[in-house]
Image (cartoon, rainbow, N blue to C red; front, side):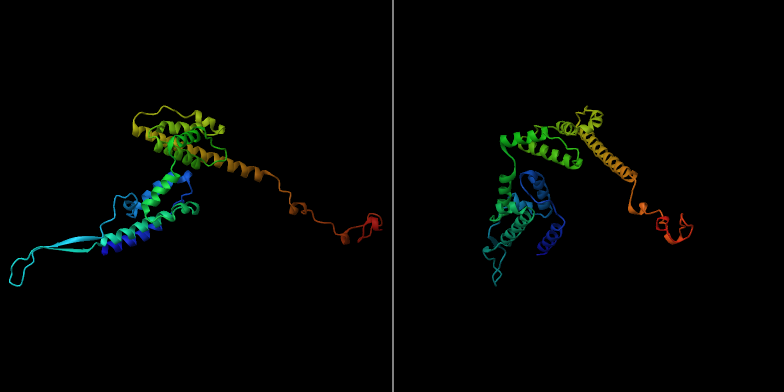
Length: 280
């Protein structure tokens, strides 16, 4: 009973921390699936989803040995059938796994799994509905990956995430068809024309050692983020300069000249004070 209490408390605490973008459809299924696997694993619920922990039997047999009668003689072993507590617990925690899945999908996606009774059924149904598979899906993903160009106004981090997502989906369908070198080379090639100076400075001589290659790709990605940050800073400073450089002809500036008071003005015609020459 103590173990149940700990599991329930932990599940309730962790579920409030695991807030991810809900599953909307094919576009974000791959990322969503990976995040959900981590969440369900942390909650010790993934074993229900992947069916590695099957439904325990409803009853179990308990063998009682070593019994003696009032005279001290050994009794025959007794077998009793009792209710298996793990059976009801399985349904309880499988329902929690199902709830965690449903709470992290968009309303339009929920319609697909709202009738599911078990977490594994919902999980498999989402995979069959939204995971890109087959030749047509592979061709479509490869076309997107190799032909996509980053827009001048697009955020560099969002662009990298999009390209990485396509790369991972392609390799899920056909493992190893696109290498890490292909990924980083295509990413650099997808940058807009204004990045030409940067792209020309990139060395595409990558190491064949896996660890060294990972470091090279990480460094290049960091350079891209730093370049994007510098560009953003320069643009902000330019806008601020041109904005502050424009003269501000506001009303207060136009009214800086003090008005002439007629009561103190001398008439140019008669020489008396208090009126204009036109009024003389």
